[in-house]
Length: 186
Image (cartoon, rainbow, N blue to C red; front, side, top):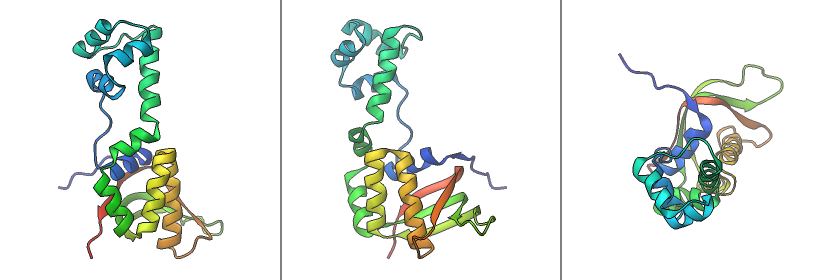
């Protein structure tokens, strides 16, 4: 019996699909490294470098307090930055998708935004090639605005390339079981 893949948020799936990596690390040591090391985190939080090293060694940040909130906010702000998102996508993968396009594989509830057809948004299995221009738009939207902007750009690309017209939009439900961008085979 085949195992069913659990539904996940589309925003999380598009980020994973574009970057081909797992979710960002929850390890405190990795987060300190992302933020520029113990000295930078000490300045952000108002704590000593020794305290930051202890947090990283124990993989634990205090739950309460201004320093813990400052650390959490700094990690969140860093991960919401275009620089961080651009760094998560492999340069070769970015170039390949922009030049050759990619095959989008989607399994979930989606469909065109058409007022006259209430059943247009329904469960779908989509395996469709998107052009390099469409993938460039999706990647640029991801870098500039994150997962939500990338989903909107994917919706515009699906309306234009899958339906053949940009008269309608394309809507994705909040969860799906698969959303991936695969290398296009000629």
